[in-house]
Amino acid sequence: MEAIIFMFSLTIHNVEEALWFTKWMQKTMPNRSTKNEYFIFALIGITILGYLTAGMFVLFPDNQYFAYAFIGFVGAMLINAIMPHLLLTILFRKYCPGVLTGCFLIIPFHFTILLNSANNHLKVSEITISILVTGIILLGSIPILKNIAKKILIE
Image (cartoon, rainbow, N blue to C red; front, side, top):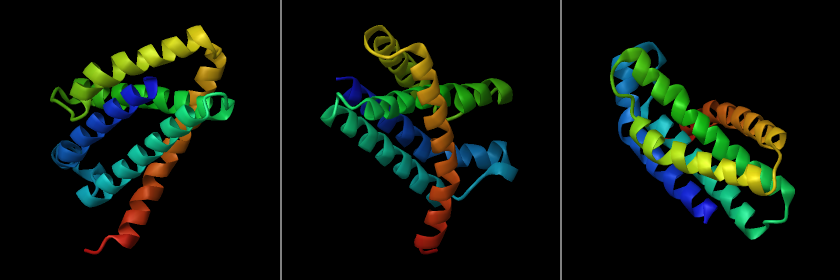
């Protein structure tokens, strides 16, 4: 059930970002904006990675590595809801796309998933390391996915 909740909240959050985030960036921080198509391609890639991670966790629940990857992804998306979305909303005093789904889906559901993992089978140190490693991998994958998009998308 946790994997389904994760995939649902991840998808809805990434759809909100895909619809409005690049326009928000162009208006609010024009020097940091990117083409909408490249950003959406990266979001789709991240969503697919999330689905693969959750699927492997469901199919192989006894595999500790898949559990670490899933929990890491859950935690990384929880941090993503806070930084940058909530922080940017506070900093610029205008709504940053991703805050609504972050506050009402990602934060409560993902926090609950992490809490259940800590109560049931993983140590807090394992959860923390999983989140850090997965977060770094995901951050590194965004520019890679954008570069792939630049090469394969026809303009």
